[in-house]
Image (cartoon, rainbow, N blue to C red; front, side, top):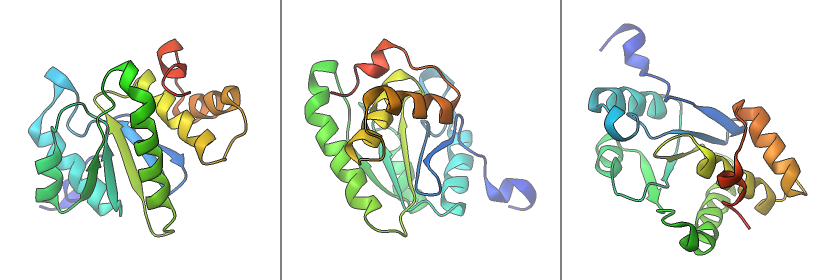
Length: 160
């Protein structure tokens, strides 16, 4: 592989939440019917080439996990499940991120099926959990500005 394709393809809706440490995107390869294996492979090349040390998959299914193994990318899978399961899952998600981010050499990519309100809400909640912001409305504002997307009610309900 040569040229620009050797560097892979940046995942769709990629954004740094904590610069050079924690990023988020849509599921590598796209979501649901839009998912393409070739695009997933190109995005995994990009993820590896850009020094990501872990991927945290929030998908309800184990999709992509084998692809991470084949690409040699460490990962964890914490399905967020139904809304009523979320409080229990958030603790595991936030503890996993905090543990990884304790090591200054870690670069983490978090994804859900699509880059939508649930993922944005979880990221805003993590900023609160980590003490990077003090209030919920500020966390929402920070994530909205970073991602250039307005968070709807489902996102705000995605964290306590």
